[in-house]
Length: 168
Image (cartoon, rainbow, N blue to C red; front, side):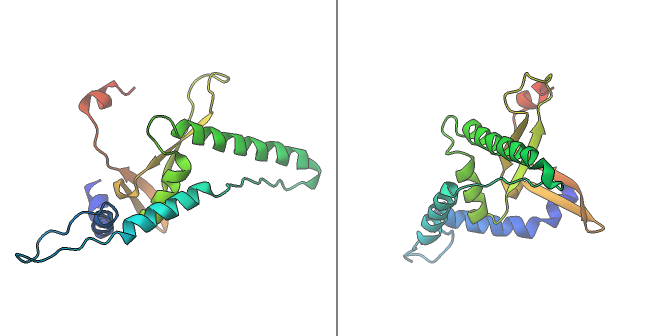
């Protein structure tokens, strides 16, 4: 895992530099009595673009190879749309601005979107949403490729020991 993190060190350095622009941090250093100007355009533009992206309509269209089964295609399309709406409702709880905004923000500020799909492990019929979607900051995701294919992904994050021990 350490080798994965080391391999992406340059990307993360760029992410940190860009994040300081988005969060309007004053640059460190400088000369005494030097006036430091923090540009607001990157923060403003990234937030504006994230909001615009979050309002875009999302489409889901499923086609089946057999034209005689277009009714199945429509059922699957409707199901995909419903699950997408459920993900948005699920992610918009509390103080979270919602899935669409988070997607837009990662697109604008990182250029990547990293998501994990988790299949509900309960018995059939006990899950409101059969597949859960969680977004993760790409700065903590480290893909590793061999032979042109991703063979593993390291996800580095901060957590409390209690949370890790209670996870079953």
